Image 1 (spheres, helix red, strand yellow):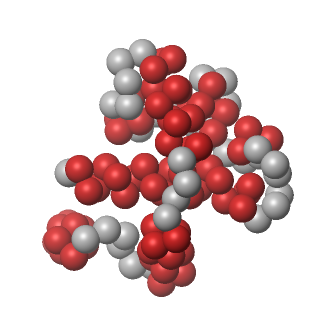
Image 2: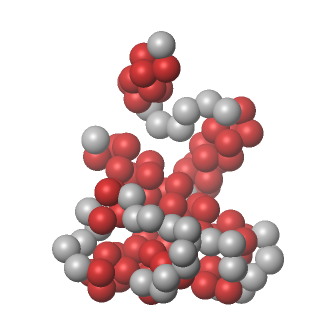
Length: 108
């Protein structure tokens, strides 16, 4: 579960920072089509519902928001970015072979 959790956090970070990486905005808070404002600052954006793993980041709204901002501010490794891009471009499940097997068994 720990590896899955880290994979999820990497994907959250990748998604939040993608508009910054592609020079659309200077700060993830500036990108209007993102849940970043809600997750990082608790702003109501209407169509976002917190996932249970996000809720597990802390016991209060403020602690979750602080933890989330800390995640986003960390640098993703080149390997993590490459894995995410590969999965997105190929449609393959991201994570370990064991996790992919679990997902495949759920599809059957």
